[in-house]
Image (cartoon, rainbow, N blue to C red):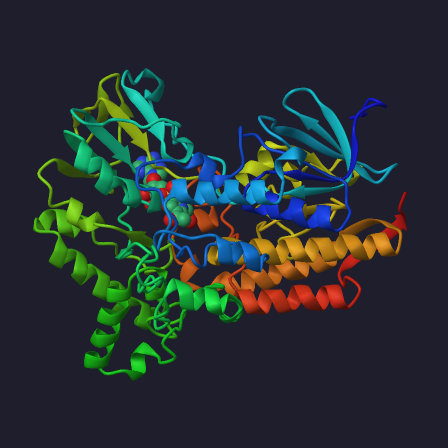
Length: 555
Ligand code: N01
């Protein structure tokens, strides 16, 4: 692809204006790089722009799911709930975009269609959906891990005469489901968050479940400061870190430092004991304590939760008993019991999910043994009958981690296409850079901890690493950086080794591409833990970018 001689040229082009793209832009600008961002949506926010379904909120506590790079931003922003809703997170993203004056370098409503490396000039030629051509010395892909929706190819789907929705591309206006028969396909995190609210509105809700999901209560609560005492008095987050919002703000740095030392970059204290060295009474006490606290820290119930099948099964059984206790109809309860390892599919965090199945206007349609046969103009046909529906909601997830990258025609050296390189699954050095694709960076790409961590801290770590790298190249007048195939292969082998016997890799999930027909089965995120990963990245930079080839003279 040749760029017209008058097409704009930048030091860096960023694809995506979600949390990653915005912070990348802010840092690059500060470091003096001429930067331009392309964003397919009409505004900032990424995943929080698109996922507007009822009940959408973050399953990481708001005090932690916030940028750490600006102490002023940390202090001035007031989260109102322990777990922020999608509208509140979107307000926060907009605040950040305004505060740091980011919009002037973002081109909205513009999808990047192609990015092709020009070896002669060591630069990326970018083609956008509006036919525009741009070039840049570096290209940073910040398109997020869950940004291409998955709609299963149900027979007859296009014939459905009612309203069709996908949780990942929800309309921007409120939808009134009252007096409606509603169907929802899927029972992952998005469904688990939306089902209780839709059930409150709908005349009847049919939940089509193929695989039951484990979920633990959020125990969400407001965090507002009491104007009389100037103190929230509320516990803002996390297990055994009983701090109020004010206490966190008084030592936000301390919270971030504790978070960065944990596997998932989340500040909470896991139980240091093995399940197997505790008595049954001690275990039950620990389970109950964690359940009362709620949220993802439930996975810290024992140190061997994710490594010992026996310990994991004890935790799984505890949750199954909770389900049987909450759900009154024993047949429905039985159908809701997951049998695989807990934490293998991402643990969901809910408000009143299991309780919803006690409502008379909710029916669980168990399609685990016999799949949905087809969609008809009137509804869903399954288990030998038609379920008539006014609205049908796909809560069927995403082509995770690779889907969006593969939708862009990315070509590296010698015309190597990303499609060819990833034909048998994604391969990347540190999940950041790709052999054969010089000067290309992927923020939270496959092969990095990303979705297994607090995304905000993972994004910041990647962005900071990339900026340091670009400054290093600029200072030395180096034109190209590219990982060697050998270093990339070693990293992929290491990834596979740590994932091979890990609980996260013990069932079919989007982590392994198991939800997309024909997708190669590869455990995509790095499961070696955040601190370990950060240390590796730091060492590689400190040794003059070991595993990379640095070439040429910059222009
Ligand atoms: O998608 P999912 P999601 N017939 O892939 C079912 C993040 N997130 O959007 O398990 C019938 O988890 C599928 O069934 P099965 C979070 O990381 C975060 O809910 O494949 N059913 C499954 O039940 C999460 O993990 C938040 O058998 C079919 C469901 O659809 C990720 O996004 C909130 C089917 C898809 O579940 C994805 O969650 C929400 C078929 N043909 C999401 N095909 C936060 O709180 C698929 N399914 C931050």
